[in-house]
Image (cartoon, rainbow over all chains, first blue to last red; front, side, top):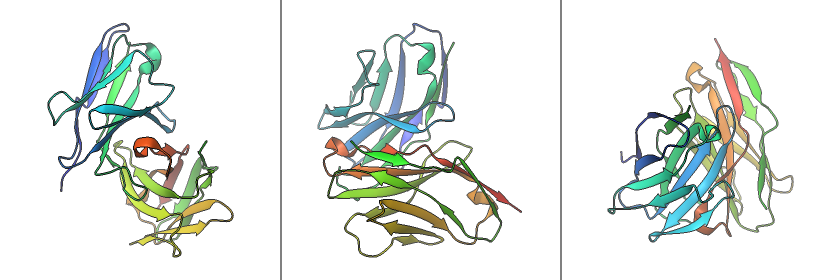
Length: 115
Length: 116
């Protein structure tokens, strides 16, 4: 069964460093997402991406964040200068389309720890 | 704005019994979709069940069913014959027709513990 793959599964980084979280969405999917889950809290939407551009972003997704689909298979989230409060689980998800009844398929997550 | 509320931070259920996890929502959209996801301790998000706002019948998927009451804006998940492997966090989520790109809005989650 096709699945969304995220790497790495865990990342520890120093405050102020740049990190890139990588995702390989399901191959025929058109919509891609990043979500964040701070430990013990709810899952929060960061950004959606379609047709090589951002279709929507949340207030959390400020200038420190960027997304890219560099080669038609990978989908990356970059955090330019990490802060302690960026420590969270980051989920990549993809959907074949953006219609109401289509589930989002989630990757297993990358746990980011900023020290 | 859309909002999902899950008022039960934690629930306990005896193995083999049924349990209902509550979810209420708020939206001004006429068309929307409601989803339930399971998050075991390993962290991944597993899709369980979907209910569309115009679906006349409650959704069912195996041991999972959705008690959808549109007038009350509730979409409670019912798990029948609970198993130890059902112990996990459960999230209710919504997607509205005007959500560009189909983002999901999640509730705070309910942690279910199944006792042997």
